Length: 115
Image (tube, rainbow, N blue to C red; front, side, top):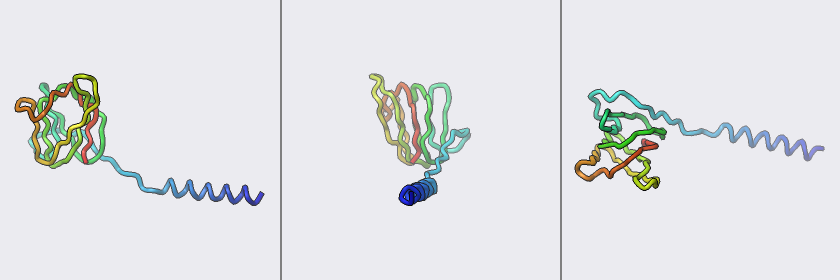
């Protein structure tokens, strides 16, 4: 009986420790672009989408023609023309454009991760 009780106390203590460990706080959000140049910007033929703050965000952005890092390092996860999952890194102040070949053809972006 004492052994069962000791095990229960040990398990409860382990659970309390696990629950008290810090978890990362992701705050990424889509924001109005305005005239700001410090946001991560994904340019589509129809409009621009801007993102701020660190973390991952699921998106569904089709056929981007440009991506600007602004004041952010980011990973753009996308599906290529063959249906394969791919990633591209965008660094601070870097601009990638499909027209000049620095941005590959990307049919669909499914996740943006600001580092």
